[in-house]
Image 1 (cartoon, rainbow, N blue to C red):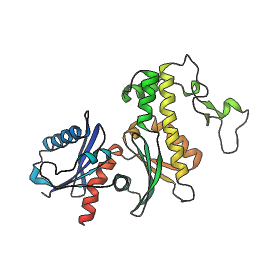
Image 2 (cartoon, rainbow, N blue to C red; image 1 turned 180 degrees about the vertical axis):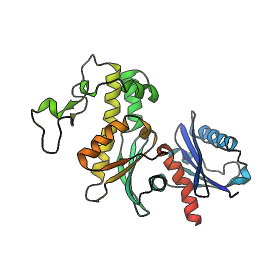
Image 3 (cartoon, rainbow, N blue to C red; image 1 turned 90 degrees about the vertical axis):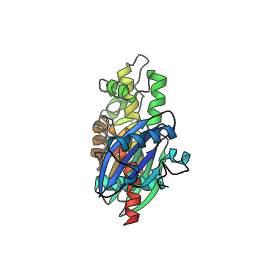
Image 4 (cartoon, rainbow, N blue to C red; image 1 turned 45 degrees about the vertical axis):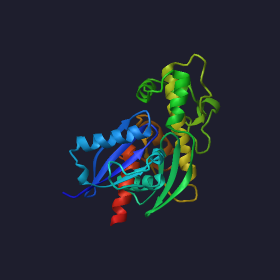
Length: 276
């Protein structure tokens, strides 16, 4: 059996790890801990144990993510390299989506935007709105930052109780804007709004801001495909909100099957591709 290349996306408290062997992704998993070093070693140990992989079976360990800066020595004596996060984003998204031309929208604590065109990867910029925004505002307004709980609450929320729509301010649709398009986020919120409505409003605000920034980043590029990766891409509300943006702006938002692991996949692929 051929050796395995391991990609690790090291966050501040969450680490994601995957293997690439013979062009296939092996058992992606993630671990949450109080610091990146603990998270990384916990994820690495669990990955080897769960997949019955010996240290001698590992050909290379590739690190990426903001937490990778804390790791400056080989992991368990294995050859360890670092890869720029934006490169890993592009490679992982291209591998998972099978597209050759796209903008990769990495929905993490904040959001970064990366252009991928036939293997050429370029960081376009980003916005400071993402999972961290949702967590912080939920702590203030809902007294929780449990993303599963927030998402579950939002399923029973009514966005009309939070946002102002075009239909609320105009008797007729505006050019290019249907009556249910958002005119102003949170402008319709009342002081007695339910927790469910607030949760719905917070998630929609974050996702809509990300979607709008993504579309604006593509102006004059001709790119109409956006690949969503990162933890926020797994929110069920993505399947409700992004199709509306697709219809409004004639674009395509794609969420790969392993979207939350794309950066770790890209890290491993950076070694595999360079080796080839």
